[in-house]
Image (cartoon, rainbow, N blue to C red; front, side, top):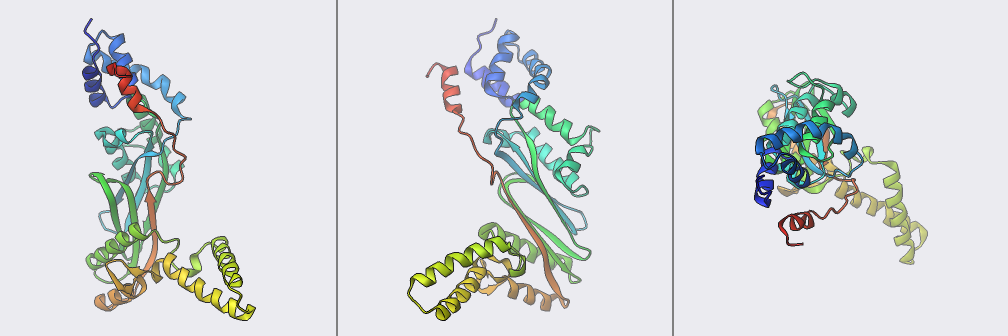
Length: 309
């Protein structure tokens, strides 16, 4: 039987994308035969897939795609347990395919039931990925924006491969002007959104609970200054307006030209294309936001295999 070295395990892991300990087990079971070990991973993996479903998956990729006519855009977040998997070609290809499906299918459940190019459902494709790679995975979120006329622009930040990144932003610009110009401006606004993470498109879109909380904070601060109540209330209104300029997209100073707000940029664009232009919506998906992450000691795993533990 061939010696099961760390280098052999590493080669199988790079070839299959499976977890380190799974690769070691596969090689032990097959006497160090690389091809047989790959087959072992595939046949044994499906039985293990269900057992991995409760493990935290906060890494992975955000994938984005825009339709050929430029009027629809989609983002999806495909999660896995480790950053290593995000570099796997098969995982990246799956994320891109799911993003393409999301162009015509809205909602995670509907995407899961949709068919891939191979004829399997997206849910089955993800299950097979879990079996092969050895980590829990899931399509966690999706977003789709479309316009009847205009452009939907996509910006991917911290790109990991073609069409995949750690953050994705879509901006939908409604207007009858030059689509290429609207795409260009939309992408610049999407880059701005990636940098500033606005809470809403306009003041009217702000979550009332978030506004109430901010008002409460500002009221307490103003009252503690010892000002008369009528003066304190005026101070609060001014501070709320200032806060909205910081968190509302159309009120924010444009990062590429801080002397101009996003609202003014859109108005300027409308003049240039000779037609009214409006931001219909935006979406910003940052990988793993809101997911509780668990610290797994993969370094210790490597050390135990190489005799350095």
